[in-house]
Length: 401
Image (cartoon, rainbow, N blue to C red; front, side, top):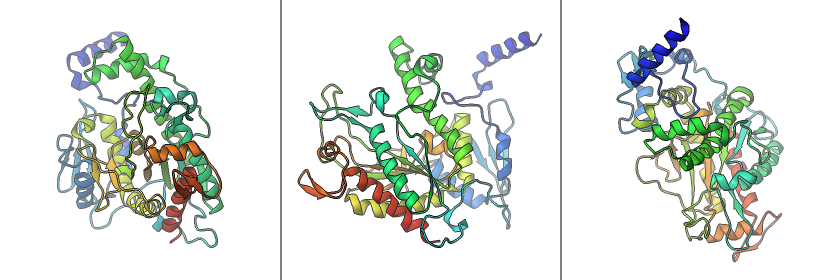
């Protein structure tokens, strides 16, 4: 009987796709009752301002969230009643969260980062996985450039500096092995479904490529999010990356003259993205966690220290995939998997264009102590410049409690 009922429900879901949950690849259906802890914690005015200006600009949430004078009516999984989030009155309940803004941290004598909990996420995986991640290139017989290996090198230098300053520091990975247990061959079914969802043909070659993408970009990041949210529970996450411009033919990549710097925080969901139940839920968790003010404050300090150290101009986004934050050309809101899954302030650090001529020369010079002339300029290694400038920005912000 149970099997017959399950088959019937599946048949109905096929006839009426709206009855089934709409989920991103490898996502679990959200438990909307987890928002209960946020009841009466935010005013209507603050909720509306964050939603319209940061998280869902240009009316992106109009079809899924209706704001009334006393509550937000939120569309849940199809076929289920909406979730009602009650707004706070004159006195709001405390915001429930595991992370602490600087304002909640007691002043510490001695080391400037004492008591601060930091998670560092070295972007990508690197090692033998760098090529399938498409974050690898080689010019002639020069040393290969692999972003995952480079971010890990910066992360390990940064750990030393931050611990010496008193912080508690964790890495989401400490080597060039994925922390997810899934591999591309185990994700072929999900890859075919993902292609169908995007309206793309599920050819054998496309499935193989999508399986790889789900492995290194989706499964890996979801596993890191579990580590951050359930085990580390930090005050802030630093996602370390290097940027790149299009290098053309992978077999014969080209160097460019462009070089720039920017930072990403959580924001700029599109209407299409908010149609997914999991993404709608994750956006609300970040909004209600009030990560935005802390992300902006930390990032402004990092902009000052890193722009001074690197002397790089800002990268400017065009289009609707990102929204400028405040009046800074260096800070942008964007919906990325990691910064919506890590349930605390998350800052994506994106300095240096890996395939710029200047940066490529610095990468070839490797890591070294002190300063030496590289590409005609006397300066520290690119890895130490990166780590030192991040540490300086954190001290400038969190050292003032």
